[in-house]
Length: 195
Image 1 (cartoon, helix red, strand yellow):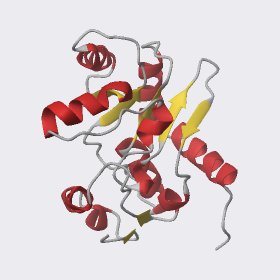
Image 2 (tube, helix red, strand yellow; image 1 turned 180 degrees about the vertical axis):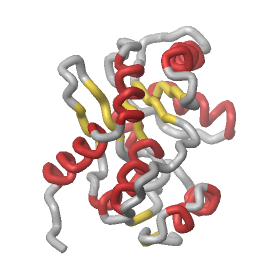
Image 3 (spheres, one colour; image 1 turned 30 degrees about the vertical axis):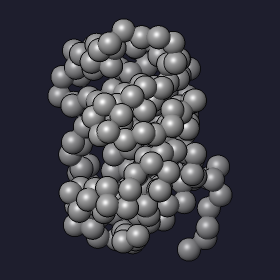
């Protein structure tokens, strides 16, 4: 098998996204929110790629569609919920989760009692997700061009490799996710590191 360069992998990813009617509809719905810096990432992208690489004709059912954005201007409490509500009205069949990466450190402090450093960009937020293969997002601009955000590259995603990203998630959290999301059961060609 020939190793592919990051630009070649990005082209493959863009083509996969463009061939998914449901993901394209989701991207258009998020674009309509008018956010400056955003993407759909994590499971929606990861599952699409792994389904294609496994030759599945039916796409995996998405637990949720993770929409992340970066806005460090002071916002009203509940802004993420307001955006989720707008997306639910646009496409009610999807379970939307919207998160401002500029405020994730507050969530960690309030919900988990953990102190984590704030991030300063969308890319920096995406880079902290628990598995390197999951640290990928896609966006859609007004010209219908699909952008790829992959701060750790696309090798793990396309190489069917699941590895712990220690930037924010503990090894225990990573292992719990691997088990609860049934990665090995759903995609048997994966190589899963157990830390």
